[in-house]
Length: 229
Image 1 (cartoon, rainbow, N blue to C red):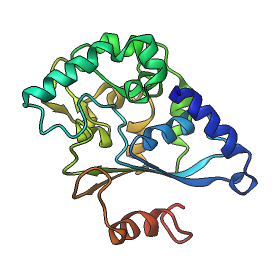
Image 2: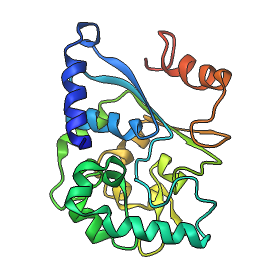
Image 3: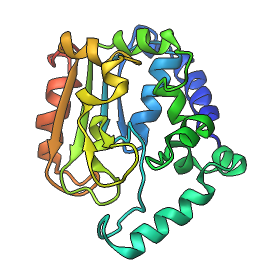
């Protein structure tokens, strides 16, 4: 199912719940992180207070899950094979993972043919100002990156960083990317307002202990006594 349709469906269900009408905290695991961000940017009605992304791929992925590394021949072959079909209309409309596949070796094709990620990252020539306004309405946007992640390539996507265009080895820091310097969705202004929180968790994708989750997520951001909850 096209992820854009899934987000519309989620909005319909969330907006039907009277207990959420005054606002709520939202937490997304893995791809749920960027999907909830799309909810905020496109709808945010009812509004999200704190948005927590645990291992979300906000700049997408360019790699095969659980590959042993970028320099391994098999990983590169698999990546190229997937990339050959990732932007075909049928694949974009039916394969969720393809909808946040970003090819740094062909940025123009990605921007032109991505039906989801390029849109919510405001990468088209005409910018959607509502996306920026809605994201900036959050109290806090918390992003968790897993330091040993082998499923998300590159793992830095979990902090909105990605491969430098034209290659797939070096990572461009967030504050040097166009999405930040040109402030397409408000990340630069949110930084100035201390609305962005970057957390790291030692381990592979979504591998965390109950104690870590309570101490680092629930207590500070998801309880009545938590920060800006």
